Image (cartoon, rainbow, N blue to C red; front, side):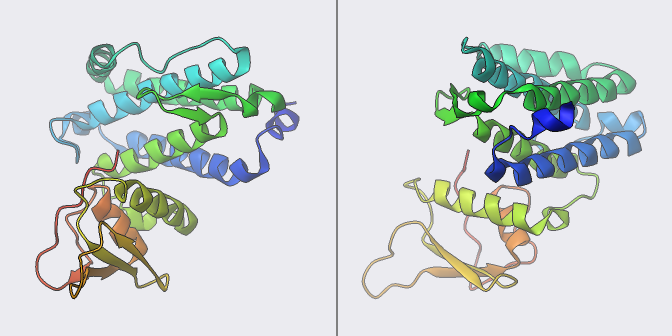
Length: 249
């Protein structure tokens, strides 16, 4: 029965669903591989331990589940009441024992997956709102969760790098990040060249007559890691110093 209901996921979103499930499995696998003491070690995110990253991923699963409930019922169900509540819930969850936190991550991920499977075909055309008030179609919720688990898999700082991601996932997120950054007035004027994709992008404003964009080249995964703050630019080549990319979310 679950397999039949799952066909209601729009065809264009099925690769995203596969990425999401793979990312969830990898994230849980990394938590299982940590000793209890290692949960309290610093993550790659400022001021957060690995327990904080795990707690955030669990609370995010609940938040995106609420968006699918909204799509299914038509009754507004916000991701979080407010930022203070969100932050407080993460702090509370991070204080759980490692065993309880592992179970929390698994339980909330399973609930979200169940919501995906249960969503009827008509509900995928519903529109919901993100925490920041942006209206999106229901299938975008799958992408939100996919992006979340893969980025925070890196943030656990257990040795997993963006380079280990599926190549198509790197491409989709890299294009999204560059498009978003091009909407920021403080974006540096760059030409980004993916040496393993034979592709390049322009970032930031036109530098003006007679001026050239600074070229930054490297593997697509290394470009993505740098642009999303998951790397200082290791593996990238440029003339001079690498500029600081703008915040993209």
